Picture 1 (cartoon, rainbow, N blue to C red):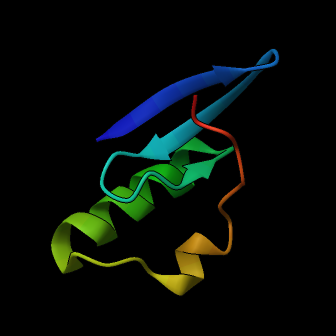
Picture 2: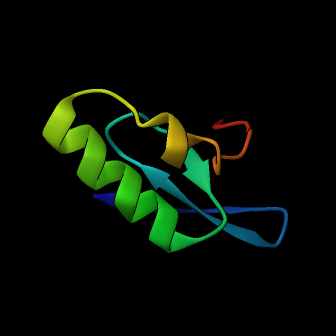
Length: 55
């Protein structure tokens, strides 16, 4: 599943498996699909991730 996160008037989407966040829901969904199936992250997908502080 993908979690919607609001920070400083911006919306991000996070993979609930590995908790990496993305601006585009598309990448978060691709990340979740990969993580769920392989129980690890794809470097090709993760390179689109952002660094946000999850309080």
